[in-house]
Image (cartoon, rainbow, N blue to C red; front, side, top):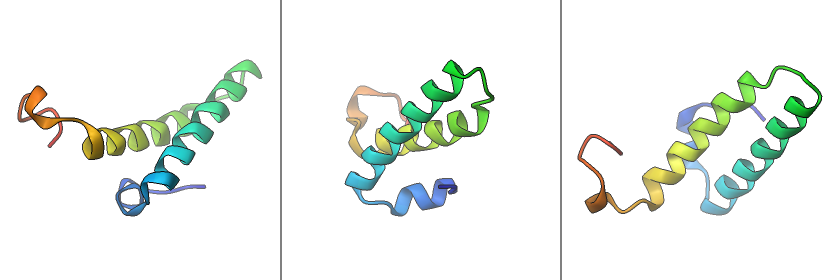
Length: 67
């Protein structure tokens, strides 16, 4: 599944967590097979960033951290 950061924003929490797990497994599989995993790693970062925005306590981070 290809997507943009905007699509990650519109996902449900369940879909977000499921896709994070799927991307992590895909990255591990590609690395084990010694194939390029850059595309999946970038998408994984988008997803993790969205998870941080949704669930991280902002008072524990500087203002610039999760804006």
